[in-house]
Image (cartoon, rainbow, N blue to C red; front, top):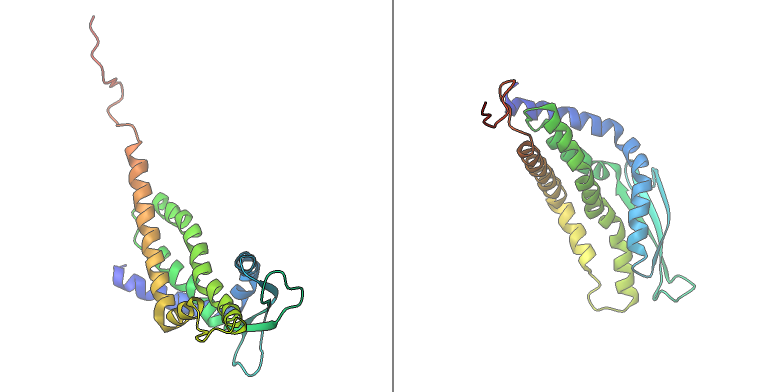
Length: 211
């Protein structure tokens, strides 16, 4: 199959799978998002309370909802604000669709190279999920902290990053991460090839014997 046709077919299949199983993927990803957001919240006067997936009016469709608390300082016992964040499941599933479609559809010479590419892609993908959906979920908490602090311009770096992702940065990051994974797997394959001993005819010892 020609390369351009392969990418078209892979993209169409990934789109169908993502559309059908976006909600399922989001539910399965909740434990990871819970860990990531908890780690981020521990560095700030924030606390993540709950994750759920469902339909929450007035938002259309199914979305991932995160509920959290924001305190003015870490020492405060009573939270100053409660934050509820909604993320459409279609946006959540964008990262795995774009990333894994490119990684799995990329031409590979051998099955070994394909397996190395998948193995290299797992940590890259987890970091990508943190940088995209994980950061978008925490943006509202950062905004709440800025407002509570009385800042004249409450727009934070978290909000700017979230807007960048919504303006096409999400796709661009997933594309770059996939290309990075392919490059890492190619480098690992070359290093592995250099370690292989040279092959020769049976009986060749590579040394000269005198009788």
